[in-house]
Length: 242
Picture (tube, rainbow, N blue to C red):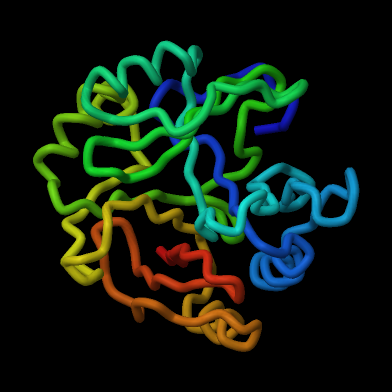
């Protein structure tokens, strides 16, 4: 999908991901080498940058504005009305962290949590629909919710994003798992963004060489073979091969 395409992702579809990092320039070097991303040279050094794969937008790297903020990847779900969706989330027991706020010329964003505290974003497009490439090596392919309460998550997200998850002909790229499946029980609820790679072992070797680490070694999931890693600044994400 081209960046200026008029087509939109349906509500509840993962449509964007960004990383909040202490050092954006270091992030460009890490992800540029790992995934073959290039970056828009806009704004001052250290400003937020958009990553591209073969010229199409695939993610963004943003500087942390407060050192107390986590170094983290965040997934955004599409919506035609971020304010209305944020209202439904809070009514269902979630929480509004920030927004919705305008992103000049691109759309509106909000950060929210589900009732168990897992953070995710909302994206209302106005010129930037989201991923220009997805599902291929070097691009977003899946997001997994790790939660201590899978049944509660089924109810919350099933009601919130019913059409995206269960609509006719849909192929969801969003799943959920019990935290203790791969993480310690004390791990808080969280979304894990997955990027596809062609060769998982080679990608893990690159992560280590670039100063990242393997958090969870490769395991088989229903949606592919997965490893959880952190970059060289501490942001966790997953690598997936199929």
